[in-house]
Image (cartoon, rainbow, N blue to C red; front, side, top):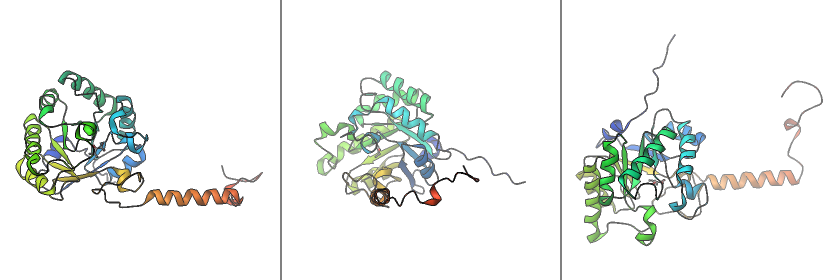
Amino acid sequence: MSQSAPQKTLTASDIRARKGQDPLVCLTAYTTPVAQLVDAECDLVLVGDSVGMVLHGLPSTLGVTMEMMILHGRAVARGIERAMLVIDMPFGSYEESPAQAFRNAARLMAETGAAAVKLEGGAHMADTIRFIVERGIPVMAHIGLTPQAVNALGGYKVQGRAEDAERIHADARAVTEAGAFSVVLEKVPATLADQITDEIAIPTVGIGASAGCDGQILVIDDMLGLFDAFKPKFVKRYADLAKDARDAIRAYAAEVRSRSFPAPEHVFSDEGKGA
Ligand code: KIV
């Protein structure tokens, strides 16, 4: 009898060790069935606070709560076997103090089974990252465009152009020195992303950054074409599921109106087999 070895779940050390190796494949997920789909191909699955916009119809990620993250985190954890599961810390759950960040990061991990948290911010969050990493919580940093700071940044703009590049370099150095195991670079110029990738010792995961990053991440609903309220330049649509869904719903509506659904094979007779 042949028995296959149990799946090994990837850890922060495994992801960290992929620096400069073959690219890390990362996607977001918010539900169990989608987690099962992405787990088959991904090294890292993020329960992103993008859930607020793509599943809950919020105008930004600012209204996302700990309770929402925990609910979706638990659902995703049920679908993951191999990938590393990372969960976003929502706006307002970590910025006040390192102690507040530790308390909420520990709660997210204990209540969902995630193996790490992600939080937004560079140099100004370095003390917080150090504090929670030293207490046993792996941290993925997120710099460049940090959507929770959309109001302070004046919109979802490219970060780090021209003389602003040094600020992003400094952020990358600061989160690396603070002990983050990897860092998301969002919406920064490609040359800057390449320089940072060469410069720092932890894997960079790009979104709107560069193919030279150590890995890439996209929001699952964006790349499947399910979320079509708007499409940033950095999103490549690998499918058009919103169109497929609209076509299917239109076909269903027409068949209900014409009484051609349900057909004989979808209904039950008075007698015979079948549930
Ligand atoms: O919330 C999210 O989905 C993210 C990724 C896009 C990096 O932060």
